[in-house]
Image (cartoon, rainbow, N blue to C red; front, side, top):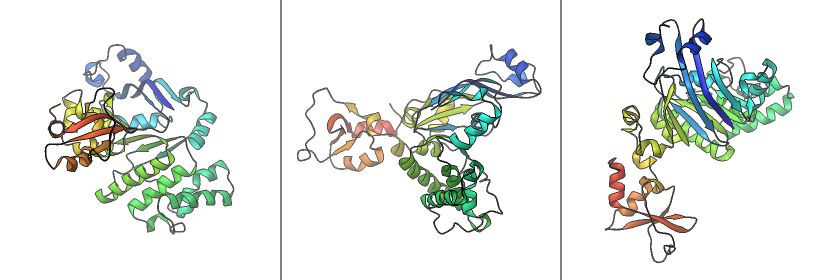
Length: 345
């Protein structure tokens, strides 16, 4: 659905010249502003490559200044990339005309920002319907669609209120409804929940997961919160100094961090919530007898979390059979769980 190949963004007066000078020899440790004699330029994104499958939530996580927000803005050329390839549904975004780019932003891709971006003089229903209005959809049809989206994000009854009458969490729900109203193929989220209180933030994360379970949108989600990344991402890219340090599933990052930088992020991860039976089980040999509910009361699916498995191991020296499509494929015992929780893997 979305693919980037060797994408760069350099800020400064002569970005193309700087790119030609530094790209062939720039290593991961290099800082172009100090080592290549270009102090007036900032390399925000350097050599980033990734793909996002249809229906996948791809999270880009990094500290402030890592380049993650610049990267997501490059995906629709809100920020113009300096070099590299960028494709959405196989179409070359970097070669698009201004007219084609407007069509992409109106029909294919929606973006949810941190600061909500609502029109203060418009009621909720008209904020949600704005993208459809830009498309030229009739008032009745766009209000019907907006009403449906408002209901979907849990704001039924607030259609005629103004943004100032809503809490921060409710305003972000309006922003989410507006992005969904145009039925985009790709959704981009630039730290949408970072300004919210912790409780409201968790509620919005749960809301997004619920909507994703229903709508299956292809999403790129930017965050500086690793716990949020673990909760929302099918895969996570950890970004540092404009580069991807490691890309993998939450389980892969927690179990096999590439270096000390990634290891520092995963150190305090809620491993019992992240790790699954599939990642820690001892595989069973082919042809292992099938699971019988009458003969064994302890079993779980491959996606069961350690948090779910732990109570099953509370009584006695037992193991939990791991099932996939009804077949026993592995087993989890106390020792395996302890090793996983203690990072001794």
